[in-house]
Image 1 (cartoon, one colour):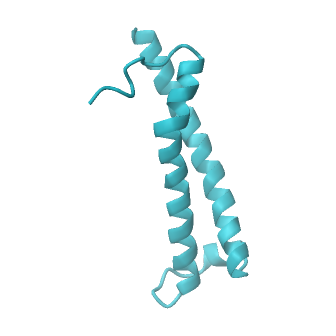
Image 2 (cartoon, one colour):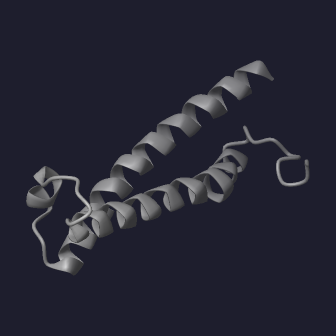
Length: 95
């Protein structure tokens, strides 16, 4: 039981870190592309209220990135754990 707990924790943490890195880079580049701005230029620009493009890009990529993390945590990882036979059978029914 303790071994399964540690295995789920390590696999889950690795998947979350990997999905965060992937979603962050993809969403930042995509939002910069939609706005027609260079992503390297925006990353190095100042954090001011007048810099509207940087604010839009940062809010958008954070929203998408943490949405992906939430989806992975609530749906994808429990399904993967169930397929690997290391899941908790009462995951969806406990309060």
